[in-house]
Image (cartoon, rainbow, N blue to C red; front, side, top):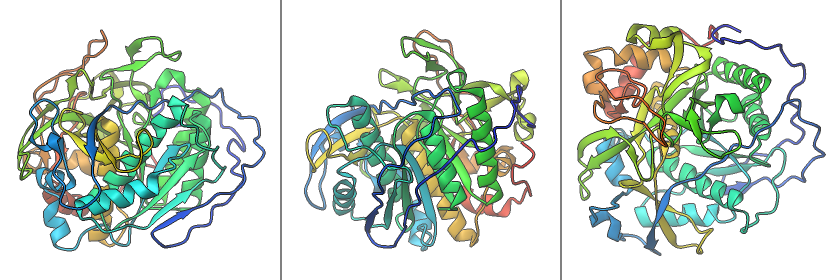
Length: 450
């Protein structure tokens, strides 16, 4: 397979998706098919864990609420209107580009029993319209176990992903596609389902694992799914990780130098993490640095599986390896985003969330805005992003992050520098400027050569 340093043999019939999900319009819809008999996985499966970082922000039950963290200097927070201002999203929304007619596919695992109420509350508190949310479980999901910290963590991820994709593209439909477990093979299976059924325009994946923890055959099958997606015009995003240049070892006992998959796949737009400083009243952009503190650090580094793709060559990406991240976004809990999440303490509670898992769904929503403005799917955008990233456009379309590094857990990472770097990628977006340039930058590549 072009672009992969260690190609593996193809697997015939590797993925068998048994149940089909009905999808209808309306505010909320959950597909609850019986869990089908499960065939043995053709892969050596490994769990993909999520450990969202968050702080309690208090309760709210109606509009026009001001949270104490909006005025703090220790662990401040941002609401949708402030993020929309900081990243220059609001001008597009004001002109009617809000994602209407587009669908964002969010891949997660297990379920959240409170996501319907959480999203409704989030909308009420921040004055957002109720979206169409389709909850799709192709292979069923188990009953929610509140004593299982793994399932609780994924429920937090679901609230973060859904609410903040919606905050950026409030007119877009959201298809929440849930795997029955966090085994990477189960997650890949429902991703395959989403692609086979062409569920949406954009896919967001707020999870990852060290490349060496995933079965090489699974990585090959995953790459083939991403090829199918890009050939259908889908744009794919993934979080670069929350432990800087490190990833947890496969047994979770320590950290080691590693890029995160699926973010490292060259068909994916990988999203790193920053610390955003913006006005806590207006949201006016101030500055950004690489996220790196007690809450974690923005992921980044170099693949040991994928070769450097052509779009990174002009930036001098070293090691002849795929470098991540491609882009960045606010990820620090100290300056995180408010999320309604009712699982731990009941519906009505809000938390300050961070992580690169906040950036992936928001970048996916930005792509949905671009698709709406273009009147067509943009599909694979990495070539265009890197083309735009060349100066002088880079100075206006991206906030070039040049401060900080992503060393973490005793693992030496990478330092931010002008242009692309393995701590902040090309930088964070000025959306009102970037989206028209994405549309106008025709590269003519669907990623099929990667």
